[in-house]
Every structure is written in C-alpha cells, then in structure tokens.
Length: 302
Ligand SMILES: NC(=O)c1ccc[n+]([C@@H]2O[C@H](COP(=O)([O-])OP(=O)(O)OC[C@H]3O[C@@H](n4cnc5c(N)ncnc54)[C@H](O)[C@@H]3O)[C@@H](O)[C@H]2O)c1
Image (cartoon, rainbow, N blue to C red; front, side, top):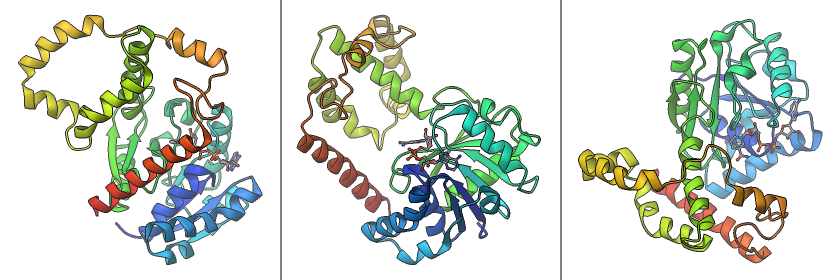
C-alpha cells in the first residue's frame, strides 16, 4: 500500500488510537479536535502508547495536530471521523468535510451503532462514503468492520479494506448497513441470553461469566461458531437448535431486568454496582487484566 494522507476527526479515546495505527503503518496523519486539551495531548498520548507497546516511537512524528477542520482534511486521501456518538453532529461534520476534500477522497465514520446510510445521506458524492468500525483500543484489537451503504462504490470498499489490512488490521466487509454491523449483533445476542439466565434464576452473574470464560470463550479466538458448527456437524447443530432455540430469549426489546438495574442507578463500574458489586480495586484489576490479555494476544500474532 502506497503512503496515503489520512485525516482523523476527533482526538478522543478512539481517534488518537486510530491516528497511531495509521502513523505506525507509515502514513502521514493529520488530526483535529474542537476541544483544545484533547488536541494538544494527542501526540503525547500516542507517544506513550507506542513506548508502552514497544512500537517505533518515531511514528508520532508523522502525526500533525491541526486546529481547523478544513486544514486537517484538505489534502487527505482518506478521512475517518471519530467524534461523539451524535447523529446531527456527524452529519454536520461530513457536510463540512465535503466542502474541503477532493471528490474521490474516501470519507469514513467510526460510529459504533448509528446507520452509515443516515450519517452520509446528505453528501453530494455518496459513493465514497462508508463506515469503518474500530474496536477499543484501536491499536490492540485487530478488527475493523468496513460498512458499505447502497451508494458505496466497490472501489471505495476495496481501497479501505486494503488500507486497513496493510496497517495490520483485520478488516471485515459488512455488505449491508444493518444496526450493530456484524460484531455488535453477535456480541449482544450473547449478552441478551446472559442477562436472561440471571433474570430467570438459572444462575448468578458471576456464573454466567465463569461458564463462558471456562468453556467456549477459551476456544472462541481460534474457533468461530460456524467453524465449530461444521466441526461438530450441521446435523448435530440442527438437532441442538430444535431443542434449545425455543427456550432461548428472543424478546425484541431490552430485558426488564436490565431496565430495572438502570432505573435503580446500578450502572456498573461508574456507580460501583451493576450485575455485580465492584470496588475501585476490582475495577482497576479487571481493566488491567483485559489490557494484558490483549497485549499478549498481539505479541502472539506478531
Ligand atoms: N469508545 C469505544 O469503545 C468505541 C468503539 C468503537 C467506536 N466508537 C465510536 O467512536 C466515536 C468516538 O468515540 P470515543 O470513545 O473516541 O469518544 P471520545 O469522547 O473519547 O472522543 C470524541 C472526541 O470528539 C471531539 N469532538 C466533539 N465534537 C467535535 C467536533 N465538532 N469537531 C472535532 N472534534 C469534536 C471531542 O472533543 C472528543 O475529544 C463515537 O462515534 C463512538 O461511538 C467508540
């Protein structure tokens, strides 16, 4: 992949990490943020991450912070937006970006759940617009979902897939712009049943997590569900589904149990209790455990 000019809009949790990945891959990166402290600290945060991961610290020299949105995107080949999850804000930003880029500059949103179609509907040139859904932290989780809309050109998808693959990511093409794309649909199908098991008194929250971590969670990183279905046989999978699926939670909305937790102010880490109680030490330990696990997985990949 030839060196490209990448512009990142939003220097928060995701934006600075995305900038870091592209800079490390050798691209020239500009980044902007309307919040001055976020913009001013972006290069320092990237430098710290690079040092912490043992990556080439000189990559930060390829990142330029720019206060003005127009100046940030003007020469870009590829623009990725990572501002707050706010539809009118994203629509406004893309409308503005389009006034300052070439007609063939690819425009991507890193929204977690918002329809790319709705974000990009107002653009004059919609064939170059798509979604790139990164996972946190962007420099440790390999997946980037590349979401096309009904308007996105195959050339824009192809360039984006190659750009991310060459930057060491694992791009996955999402051919239809559906809520939750692929990853979050799968993840939340599992969460719905996890909550239901607790709600029905079949086990407590600790047990749900323990069962996953001690059983199929161990295999998931190397054995996807459809590989697994083939491994055991589609006939066995069908037999299991005939027995199990009628009893699995299929309600269309959020669980009343979850709604009750939120109504009671049991918001998880931020209030000290959600499905379980969390002391400050337990929260820090779990965050650290996840980070170490992801770092180890990245080292094993390398
Ligand atoms: N946090 C995650 O785990 C995660 C994962 C995948 C996708 N996302 C998505 O990525 C996007 C960014 O999320 P985040 O977690 O980095 O949020 P964040 O709050 O850490 O960062 C957002 C940044 O956008 C900046 N911003 C707001 N308005 C702006 C404007 N008009 N121009 C320039 N900058 C502006 C803010 O100042 C802030 O620094 C959201 O759409 C989110 O849903 C988040």
